[in-house]
Amino acid sequence: MKTAICMALGALFGLGLCLGTIQILNASEVSPHFPAYGGDEDFAIRFNWFVLMVVPGFLFIGGWIGLRLARYFKSAVWAAVGAMCGTLAFVVALVLLKPVIESLSTQDSANRGAVLSYLAWLALAALGGYFGARLGGPTKT
Image (cartoon, rainbow, N blue to C red; front, side, top):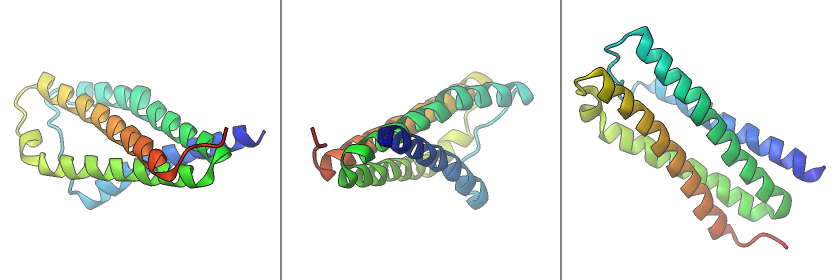
């Protein structure tokens, strides 16, 4: 029961990290805007990828952090810090690539760029969580 509760709390953390990052980026207006040459069609494509890939990915990352929480608190805290650092690294890369992103010239390249940025965000958050957990120590057996 403890494991299930910790995993649910971790999944909520993952969801909060994902949606919180989006809200901060939208409010700060520092993130680049991928061109939407196809209008609503582009929005639908990107939204579907976000909902079907990014949100479940962050729920999974958060659930994994929750599983660590059920076994070893220090490791879970470091995993959460690592996931946040991975997200921060993604945001920095996104801001640095802003001129390139905003100058994408075709609908396909803009959509591929958006989807690849989603994949990069997930990968950096997962790697940050993994290395953070490793830094925090092993789990109890």
